[in-house]
Length: 353
Image 1 (cartoon, rainbow, N blue to C red):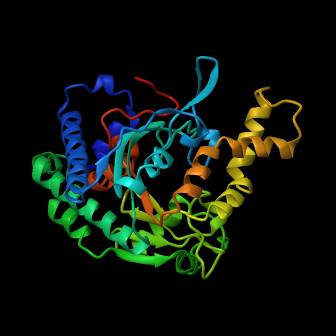
Image 2 (cartoon, rainbow, N blue to C red; image 1 turned 30 degrees about the vertical axis):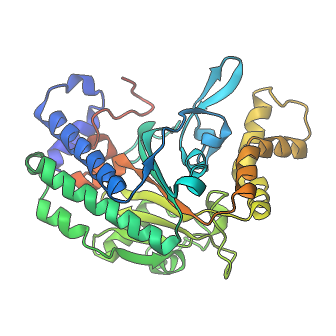
Image 3 (cartoon, helix red, strand yellow; image 1 turned 135 degrees about the vertical axis):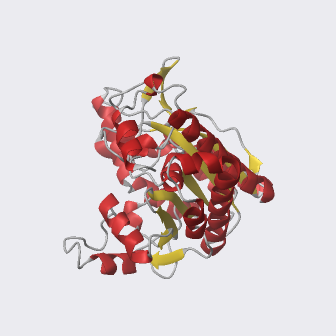
């Protein structure tokens, strides 16, 4: 995307002042093509699209419970959903391949080039292993890029995107690197980075640059920094069978993993997770669980996920899945370093439409 356009759009996130502009229309068409490309891949792959709930209990949260928007629901605490993953997984035993497309809400305190409070999340769950999941994600990304060029090529050109360069970047197979190797690769530039640390945006940019400015999968992250239901690697239980796709401009745009099918191990990891501590603290501070011993609070927090644990116990099916951040994929398509310039209606802490 042209630099002056990125600067203008990122600085004017109130899109109501941009309605009907050539730039906003072009972005809308590219965004529509992105979604069409994903759904084309879902259809070709035999996925069943599930309508998941967007008002949920705690089971609609990602790793960071503190970024949930809380709302009342007829006297019961409820939250704007961040992910449909667990609800989607419930259909895998019978339907094999399922997907959903919808909004993800994050109470992100940062107003910057990477975070929004609402964006479109595309999710899949299917019976497969990590290698097969990587192949699925690559196919979806290729379909998205091809539809963007085919449906919105003139708009991409107007926005300053070279379609040949875009299609060249999604040439398969994508680059792959383990988390271990990523840390080693980053050490000279970031000597303070240690094994077990999560990768930040600057680390992601360096890794993508190291890979040749193309999409890069980073695999097998430490279990302590990932979601509780990611499957522990049976050969090295320090890590989970997980995989993030880093894109030029977008950074970490796809989070994926095999799912844990051992219900006892699943419950143990959930109980010891940082997220359960967050839930207990938040409930205590709100007054809902005031005066209850801390260990009992953790037990109560785990019970919020009981339906999912019971589901896994009764359906121990090996499967895997991913969540694709639509607006970060748009950054990749538009070559925009700022997420606020890569969607029709960017929402953050400072703006609401």
